[in-house]
Length: 357
Ligand SMILES: *Cc1c(COP(=O)(O)O)cnc(C)c1O
Image (tube, rainbow, N blue to C red):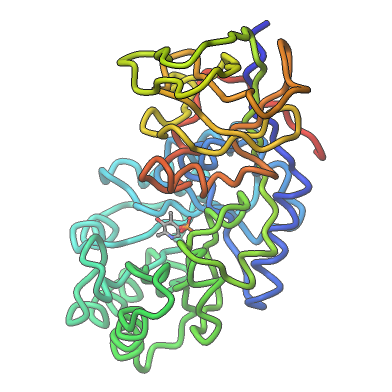
């Protein structure tokens, strides 16, 4: 069998979830959208169900997958419903539902529901993606209450720049949120991973950690609490071919790397079709037979090349960690000019093997 695989450490996942609880003292919805950022939503939710206050997904399709797997915990739909006829399913499966637009509010007012909803009413506090305008927020809250269709309302908003630790924008967003919710006695939810890790003064009854659960930092710089995260996914494969090349020989498509001296090169069964970023350049760190080395030349669809010149113990069959406990996903992401969120979500084709269930 092809040796490429993703090892998923569920103990580390639980550690990271617990860290989010511990540093905030809040209830935490584990964000498992996009197949738990490539880690497998059902397995992740099963591993966290005993300790999690609930889960958050992007849409009803993702929520139904959790329910079909027997997850009974609360599940919040972060984009709410896309069409009014989803409301019947939302009630049937007890999903919690974000309301971010006036058309959704109107749809709830007009719906015939067999049970009242739990609504997370979302304010646009300055990110300008989704969320109600501050001038509409109080009226929307009152209309939801008056509709008789809603059992509970949580007030929420989302940060645009919480990963920038010295940026004032998050404070400005908090101020907009506080002004908009004045006088309303409802629980609130503001904090995503960067805010959980880096913004201890933001109060939030519910936090919504995503990337931190998977052990990757959302920051571009070192940060004390992020340093306590444990990587959950190890993407690894094996050396399937070894070549000795003299100086002046090209390696891979486009001859993007040319040996400047005699080199020993390992070909690894891993490529961009597995989700390894094609834009990772020569020099991106990899771990070969326990020793740090580097990527050489262009990443191709199913294979990539690594430098074995200084790793004499490595050879055919040696294990290569592309990211994991030693080579951080955020390091690889930065090298490839992207973010760990994206490289996790891009994972495909490789089997996922779970430990610590
Ligand atoms: C994805 C998402 C989160 C989680 O964000 P992280 O940065 O991964 O912690 C939280 N809240 C909302 C509304 C989201 O869409």
